[in-house]
Each structure stands twice: as structure tokens, then as C-alpha cells.
Length: 182
Length: 232
Image 1 (cartoon, rainbow over the protein chains, first blue to last red):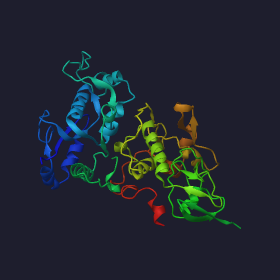
Image 2: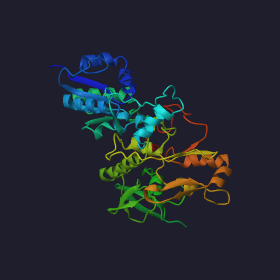
Image 3: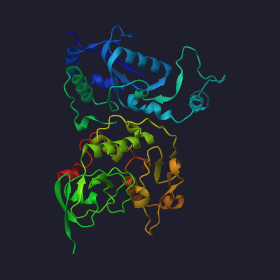
Image 4: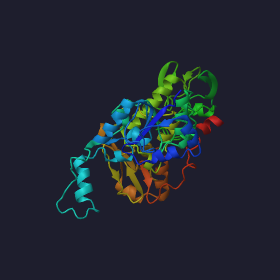
């Protein structure tokens, strides 16, 4: 039987969750035995080359590109997992939620105390740039998410336990110490 | 002389003095009923409903209901625990609870209850209301994003001559906590510290302090809230 295929991505995240995945230490060797990676920053595969079994999503959706990638993951993965606080509730990027988008951009590019050399009062608006959304959305408000692994980042043991449980079909171990929101 | 009465919690026979509130009576019998707005020694308010139990089949708040002889109380059942979990989830989506950056994380009662009830994601959509941080007081920082309106600070923090330092203003979704500007400024450091401790979340914070206990050594890092009661 071929190995289960895993894809990962970081949307509006900081790559901390991916670092936590690497933090499983020498079990990474077992992981390579257990699964095959497809689209992921870990192996630098940029586009899906086949259907995957598990998709790990880090970060919420703050722009149109995030939505596109997330929908692409939903299309290509049997199981989607929200990995970390940002994917689950928007996380720190969602601190801007509740503040009007124009107010945010004006503060960042025009009025902020660290703004320099913007005499023409330009807010970046190139067509190539993804459009910012009105707020940062948790992933499950955009597509169906099957499982949630909280934490900032989720503890390496939590990610490991979840991956092993998903691959083997055994019940997941959830000791108290591994479910944390920070 | 006080009279001992008998009642059951989830079928376990318990005894307590007549008139004791259910949550206290349960505690004396080594049974934990989760609470959030309740403070020991202060008149209960019964507003958060986390402590809901079924008394002879009817839902009641256990912090405001005294035990009576022969009561049959349901506490740790899937139905009641799901109601409690739903309340916790509702509190999370109603405010802006950014646990990763919060000074209170690890010592927060709301967060600890979410851990205990294994909240992975709230079942309700996030609200993301716009709320203010008020740092005008010389003693305390007030973060309305995190306030769950439990009224604990209003009920427990009083000056020596019995005046309230905190109060509610406005109504409905606009209701929020305010601090008396004069009393807030005159507040002793001990009282300010007590206010920080009485707040179940990170809505009242001390100035120029934070993140003092490392991750792994905080109150609810290793043991669930209520385990001290269950160990007895």
C-alpha cells in the first residue's frame, strides 16, 4: 500500500506551526517513513501534483490569495486540519478585525509614526498584490475543516499524536498538557 | 446548631449543612462544579451559568441554590457538560480573546475551563467586536476586549469604607466596566493587586508587569482547574 500523502501551507501565519512540526525531533525520521509530503514549504513543492490525504493549514485568511490556496487545499485533500490559533480564530493578524480596512492601511502607509519617504501618499495597490479582506477569517468560516489542533504553536506532541492517529486510524491521545492556546 | 442533610450528586451520597450553596456543598464532598462568576465568600450572582446542574431534573445554578434534604443533583453528565462547554465557547467568540499574547494566559480561569472541557474550536462564529484598552488609571490597565462582564471586580473590590471602585455603565451589548477615577487613583497597591487576582480573565492587569511566570510553571499549565478540589 502506498503511503498517505500530507500537504501543508502557511496562510496568514508566522511559520511557527511549521517550526513546531519540525520540533518533533528524531521522530521526523519516523514521519518520513510513515507519510509522503506533497505541496508544502518543507519540501518546496509549489503546486499539488496529486490528490492528498491530509492537509495541514497554518494561519487564517487575510487576503484573496489565502482564500484561493485554502480552497485549493480543500479540493486536493481528504482531511483538512486547522493547525494553531491563527487557523482556528484568526490569531494575532485578527487584531485588526473590528478596525476598518482603510484605517489600518492609512495607519500603516500614511500616518504611522514609522512612515518615511511616502510623499506621494501611496497605499500599495498593484494588481499583482492580493486584495486584503475586510477582516481576518478563521479557516472554518471559509471551507469545511475536519479537525482542529489549538496552540501557539500547537505542541509538537499534539501534532505528532494527531498525525499518527490520522494515519493509523487509532484514537488520538489528548493528554491535558498538550492542549494549550498559547 | 446546624443540621446535616443528605443529598446525592451523580448518584454519590453527600452530606452538608442545610442552607449551604450546592457548589460549596459539592466542594466539601470533593466534587468539583465549574464556576466562573462565583467568588468564595462573596454573595453569589448566578450570571455566567457555568455552574448549572440539574436538581431533581430541573436546571439550576449551583452557586445560588442551597442544598436541601434528599436533593438529586446531576453534575458531570454529557448533557450538562455540553451546555457548559457551549457557554465557554460563547464567551470566547463574544470578546477578543487572543490567548497567545495575553498576560493572563496560563492563569486565566476562562482559558482553564476551555482546557478542562477540551474546547478545540468554538461552535459559534467569531464576533470580533471593537473594544478599547483603558490605561488611564495609575494602578491598573483595563482591557475591555477580554472582559466577560462577570461582575467579580464590582462585587469584591470595595474601599475600606465600603464604597464600590468598579461599576457597570450602559446596557445590553454596550455594557462595560468602569473604574471610579478618584477611588481608582487612591486605591492601595494591595487592593489593586486583589482586583487583578479577582479578575478571572486578563481584563484587569497590573502596570509595568507581565509574563512573570514562565510557560510550564503557570497555574493551569499541568493540572486542570478544579483538580485541587477533586484530590481531597
